[in-house]
Image (cartoon, rainbow, N blue to C red; front, side):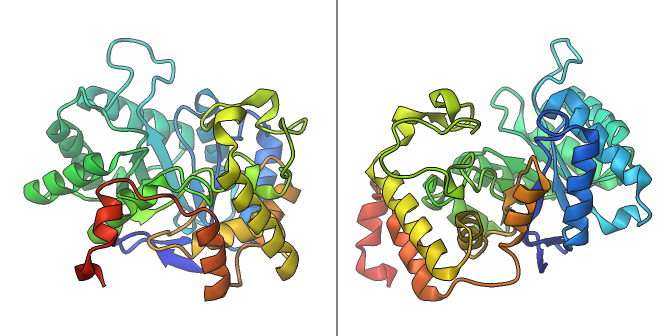
Length: 337
């Protein structure tokens, strides 16, 4: 597996990141450790979790795995996130204020059984906390050695740009990564977030690159409901909406094109969808999640090869979004050649 720099930082990470949201929920500790072992065997070293996943169990499972490894802690890049209430209770158990940040990082360090976190990320923007308080506190964590690098998740473009600008003006540690929803179908980030990331040296580590399993080939034109034992079963996917509002002609065009390309290349649809994302501008490493070794092995098959330019263009065109104002107007400008 290849390694890439995370944004403008000097941190190298594997081109696929193993997401640990299933740990402690859909995969018990033994199964989670097998997934981690398999990922490491394949050359993966970038692992993403959050303090809220499975009520902290995900971090604990990773911590136990780290403690039992024969290799050095420095061989692994651990990313975790904070913002939501993990059950500590109290008025300051949520958000990006100093009190919550300092408590959250200590809890994560304890659960992860480590002295430092490689990438510490805000799970979302906190409009109620002064941005200077948030950024100065995070800067202090880097200076103390408890955190190596900083990132964000689920930010709007203006929130990311404001954070970058304030940190630069104050001389504080910058954000080097952002974690947005991004895949062949969900491409709204391309309008403004991706340009900000490219301009400011922020690496993109997309979550839900399979769109909750949609891009694995299980979903075919003509279906009126999700197959049994899938994340869309019951017509609702917690983070992506419901079936009726998520399925339209564009969705099926992307699905049809993905399946056709996969058949032509002798690859699985999941591998093609991941490979497309891995080759998009600014993307460092898609976050892949798995419940089983078979699912993980399929995802790992996205590494070690490349889509040619013609195929990339074909897949990209299938899901191209109409440009809202002013993006459509600016795209027609003769000075954008």
